[in-house]
Picture 1: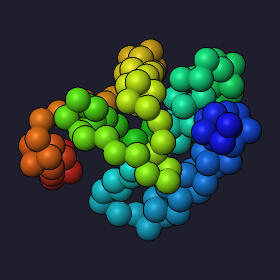
Picture 2: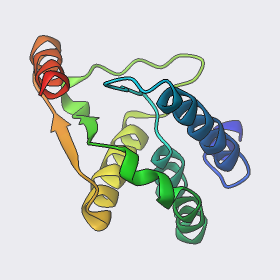
Picture 3: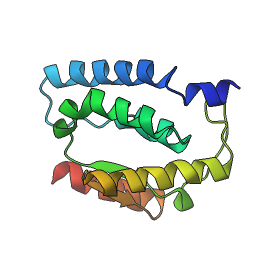
Picture 4: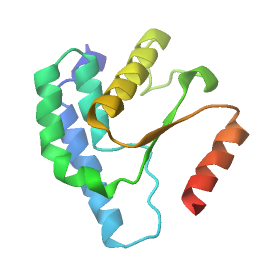
Length: 134
């Protein structure tokens, strides 16, 4: 029940607002690079993955103004990253794959720049470092 609720339009707008605030705070410091584990589009994708297209579109509209601040999204290939559940990550491997598939579809539909990172951990770190130093 909680897992479904946290992926709904009841909870995702709050999480999205918190992420946006954190990113805006980081931007005010004017760093050369900001690398985030979460983004304002996560809420959009999670709600969309639950079949709530209208809710996902509403969440996207809330943050469209912020999207140009991103240079590129980095998406890990789940085939290369071992999955372990914990207190937060409790989804099945199938749900994890569904999230991934919805992220890929979302990036393609919106033409938001992204790169799929695959390979060993060392190879992925090397690629991220190259992108950051770019």
